[in-house]
Length: 226
Image 1 (cartoon, rainbow, N blue to C red):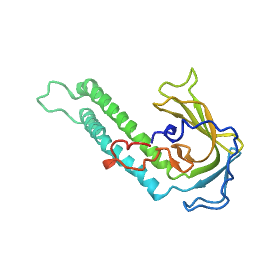
Image 2 (image 1 turned 120 degrees about the horizontal axis):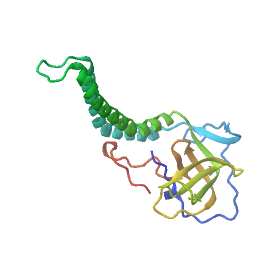
Image 3 (image 1 turned 90 degrees about the vertical axis):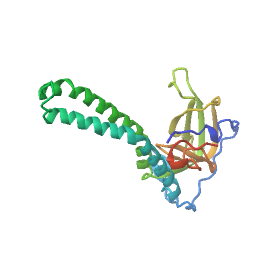
Image 4 (image 1 turned 30 degrees about the horizontal axis):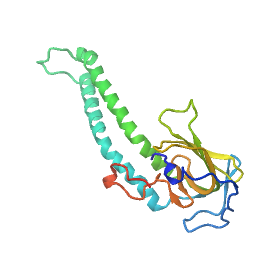
């Protein structure tokens, strides 16, 4: 699940008077709990993930699983070959002894098995982390969204950073953002819904594309973002 909030207002004009709206005092229809929680001295309003939101994450996990089948099969094949060369005798017609095959060939197949295992983990790591994140709450903050351009010594491949600020202007969380459009510094009041792993999900009720509203076929590919 890639964080992308530039499509939900990165070009919004800077607001002169920064006064956040009052946070809702009662639970909304989305089953948000009215009781606020404190995290690092900041007031956050949590709510559980809805079934529709969790279904999107499961859909993405299924799509990645289809891609991960190939490295998983290759890992199992090379792991089986490595074990066979080490623990099972070779045919009588073989020109190599069992120990020669274990010393010469087994490390080669073992290295290939390790490479495919790392590939498999790399493919599945992000969707599994995203799924685990659905068992933690989403948060709502009636505060500010801050867009910050990339500094000279910033990370390569990033366009800038987007952060959620509480009603007092204190940073709750910040994420790197990749965007094709130029990234400009901006701070504006907004009702923000976010997760600490996925980033900002909604700004003033508008989806940022973190959770696509249209699912790709079989979970493969990325739905177009608004």
